[in-house]
Length: 318
Length: 257
Image 1 (cartoon, each protein chain N blue to C red):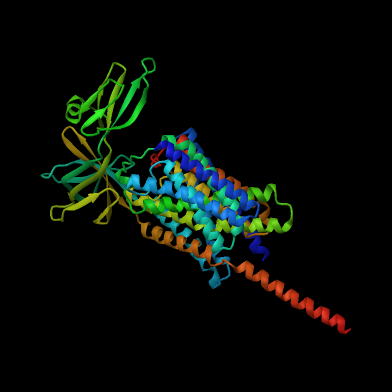
Image 2 (cartoon, one colour):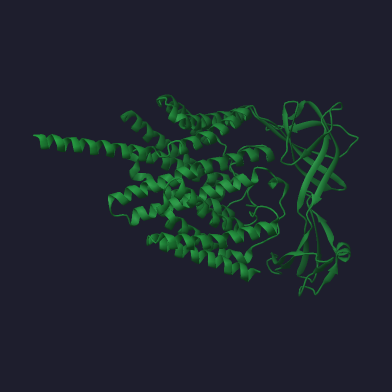
């Protein structure tokens, strides 16, 4: 019992150290050095110690069916950490950008951390079609501070009502949708391909269109004999041992450039299984113990009362 | 519309506060009625937001906090009827009142146009946010009970009852926080190709979870019970950082939350 108590104390210390490490690294990432990579060896070593401690904890705990929640949640945590470690050591992830061109099969090549070109499993990719859907646009009036050149939003989320965009006092414009379309200028950022539409009301105020994407879709084939697959964001597909994600589509110079992520995660199954264990385990650990302390208290009180009565009777007989 | 909404918000907050007062005075029947009226006003705001969106009202901090306000009463019903912890009415209503007071000042900036980007269009979105809200409401209540225990509890019986109360509330919240965090991880794996990005929001959610995990370990050990409330207090600070601080100081994949 004393050992168990000491062990619980050590668990608490290790948990506190882990929390402190996450806290310090998070503050570094947040306030000091935003490019700091938190999946560093400091974190891996701390999580490694944490994993070993949990394995010891599982082994030392005497088995009882009521403790099933305890077992599941701790085993689940260990599985998650092992799965993530397997990915950390042996996982592969590459981002690949290719233009939509139904006539061309591009080799799936990427650059690894050492800067070497890698040809992923001799795969080809052919983008047959793309689809980008936007929500109805909204418009914001900005004012430019002539001294600092800062842009301050004055009116946000203006919408076209009954075919007209009413800007109110800002330029006194009541513009129809068609007039607005003809007036807006397009600016395309040469570095990332993003574009926006705007026009100036006065020298220091301008209107900008906010067009938010509601849906990305790309129809692709990964080899000449493969069936065309429809890729949607949030719905990755599996092909040839790779999990393939649609990350986005950017229209640029008349073509749609599609961004994919190719990923191989040897620990994915173990991680997901661990998550299920952990969820089930925490629910069982939390809800199975409900009422136990009260029952014990009542039992102790009843026994004490009986003993007290018996003691009184004995005393009276004497 | 905005003025009408503000009136409903403040009515809801006032009824929650007064209900808390009557729970404190042990006048439970009056407290139940006042709590019910506060909850009805709060629920009407949630329904309005839901109807205007055409989707669950989780667009902005205003909508999320309005939802959180209603979560307290729902959680209290569970604690009252299932856990037999009806005495916590004051703590739950005080939290609802504080949250709705905050909502009152947010309502001016409430945006009712939601353009859900493709990354947010997932089956995991609703359970992820909902479970976090349930867990965080209960964590907030555990903090209020903890404060009563530390500042006002004099006799041992009351101390024991409040100790058990904090534990019961955290024990109920913890599985929801765990599920919310893991659903978020599964979702992240579907949309960004990794379970964990070490994003600011994720980090602080993990720190919050760890704080309450440490508390649960402390509670279950006689020696460590002396320090248990440190982690309830630190847990709430981490929770506030997760919900509000990260939006101001942080960046990353949760920029729209």
